[in-house]
Image (tube, rainbow, N blue to C red):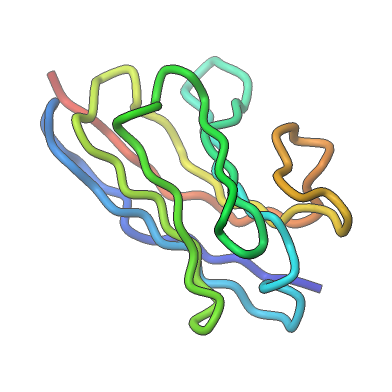
Length: 125
């Protein structure tokens, strides 16, 4: 069992930055791929970024490449998402998720077993 709690969301102007954190409980955090998803009002949840258990491999949604950076600290059981050059279209509830055992860099929602409750990110123009 893994429990996930996101923090760090808020209101920021376009061009600004935010750093999201996801604190995980459970003994298997360090052995799972992790990811971030987001859901904007009226839209489906979409993949944003994923990272392997060691942090050595990452994968991003095309529109956030070069602006967002996913990272993890296994000693602290924490996942991060550094978001720079934010745009109004980045406005959404952001969720962290823990991937299924055996999936190195999970990219699809069905490859994740555990989800946090989400944190709101609002980017004003």
